[in-house]
Image 1 (spheres, rainbow, N blue to C red):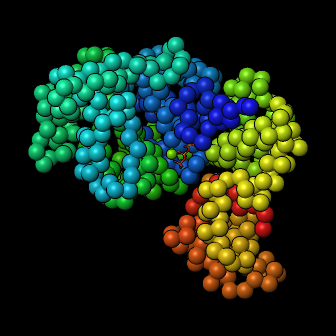
Image 2 (spheres, helix red, strand yellow):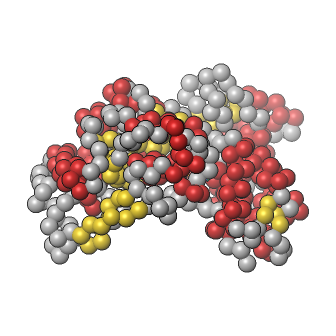
Image 3 (cartoon, helix red, strand yellow):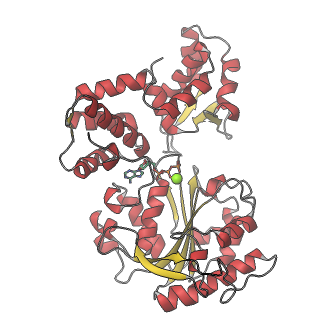
Length: 430
Ligand SMILES: Nc1ncnc2c1ncn2[C@@H]1O[C@H](COP(=O)(O)OP(=O)(O)OP(=O)(O)O)[C@@H](O)[C@H]1O
Ligand SMILES: [Mg+2]
């Protein structure tokens, strides 16, 4: 039995040796990290690989440029790259304001990623560790013992009653003096905020980040969005900070997607091989979404196990596709599919027509994925589907997904909220 997890994962990629492609983005990240001032903003569609890139930024911030070297960017790494200590926090929708974000950061007790771990105090035991297996891996700090008095950081960094922003400043200042400079001899502290898009009250967050940013404190935010405005609402206030740091994560090229499968083969160390044709077919149906590639890869391994073979041939892959077609393979996507169609064969057809609409790259937006209702109407008529306007609302209703969102600029244009779901519908049998 071959464990699919050896070569494939649906998790964020932390290990640089598993991270594939993205050379241009890595180049942008090197620039953004080495700008003395400024912030970083990663944005792009769901499941496109943002968080994985953010974890690679964290790695490079610590001074580990293995990935950049592997990508052939050795010459673009500054002779003396800026080095950081890092904080990583995933936001959630309960964060209502800049203040509550800052309060969360001040209270996050994650041993390896939290801000609080770095605040110096009596009795807290902090050790160096590396985040990767590489020998060159840059050292970071983690807490192994929070101390007898529990989490109390008043000695060096004062908690200011009912002024959380000031408390945050005190915390970061003391981290910069004691840990960043004195202990680790680094240039700056980097605070990475993932899932930044889910914060509902983003009002004023840009200007808060701006007021907190300095040569010694850089922020990086990451989340779903077509453009910067989706991510940082008052982005005008951080425009200058983002001169080098706005990074759009787009779908991968087919070549990169195939590289995920090549990398998996290496990780399986000969225990499993994919035929070139299968790699090509997987890349084709993945349309640059690495999440889908990883899912398909895993299914292929499971099927190869079932058939007791080490070769993922077209035969194996066709059986994988058959299982997907019948809805047996990906329970979460299948549930979303059933919820969306809601027992209506007509809505099912409409969903397929929308999902299968050929992509059109527009002049302004090469981030594809939009669907046009107008084009669907004709086909729907031919298939004798009436009342499209009554079938559509469920697909837009958040209680049933939502599967689609309206593009506000122009009526009749929609977008699949989850591009991977769209890919799934395309493979699913009608
Ligand atoms: N460079 C890469 N090489 C190989 N696999 C990748 C790469 N980037 C992402 N993946 C895979 O794609 C999937 C999605 O990655 P990730 O979680 O980073 O995306 P995301 O854009 O943050 O998603 P979400 O919008 O859901 O937060 C994961 O299974 C991950 O393993
Ligand atoms: Mg993510």
